[in-house]
View (cartoon, helix red, strand yellow):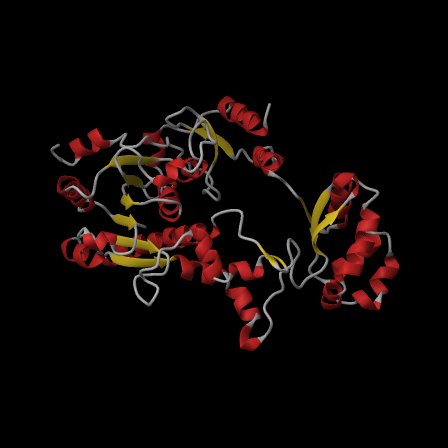
Length: 405
């Protein structure tokens, strides 16, 4: 059985989370209505986290196909892996916003909302009469969160932006990969950074509204979100200094810190941050106490400069051990270490199992395993409601809001 199958069997055998009504009522955002014209990752990741905390999220989708991110792959029982990840616990309302009737329906629902989120093309909501300048006069309590590639002002405001393009524009590709071989992140890091920034700022805006009674506009830029995450390498290269060197999976300036080959084609990650750990590593892991006195490796800067020679010495020792044995030696010596896992290893990770991090969510194609939200307050039930089909909630929402069809 695959690792996915093992986790699915484990999730299905565990006790289900409390029912939707029981769970949402106890969560911190219970009673908050979020309406979202969202697509791709940044907007949906933001609103899914709001839904995790109990907010009611009405996701606006195109009739028929819905969010284009539903179709990027079919790896989760015929559903898209990105979509399954970012869209649980939402209601899907399919509207053709080019039709006046549907646009008016959206405006009526937004008038009742606490938060309006959108990450459509630049200027789209303004053309529909759903820009903040219009909304704030009619609904001063409304929190509007606009997510875009570059923000609503400045020379780049009308540029289209996708995750990989922002990885390039933000300088991320200049510090990631190996010399001459820049590498993108294996996940949508620019989208995730923007979605996280939007989520954090919406929470702050809800708290602020509780004090003032007034809503606000949040202008979240993917570039600015990534620039925040890139501040360390920017400072490192300040005043014309050389930027961090591309170093693959190694640390650019601390050594030994990165992957090392062991016997049986295994790989381990290790890292040390100070000279005390370096001495322990030489004595207890490598069994080479003289190496701690070698002038070539007297401090982390020298070890980094002479990493090629030091790597050869370390891997010569490691070559007679399996990866698991090296990890045991590192752990016993108090040296930070990690297994180089693949996706199968993460599905089966013993720490996730031991901490009861797996449950399941329902989808239009049946139950699938899912990780519970990280960092949930102790004693608070998590919300893991279904992933909706396109337009699944149209009839109920129209009836609730008194919208005639």
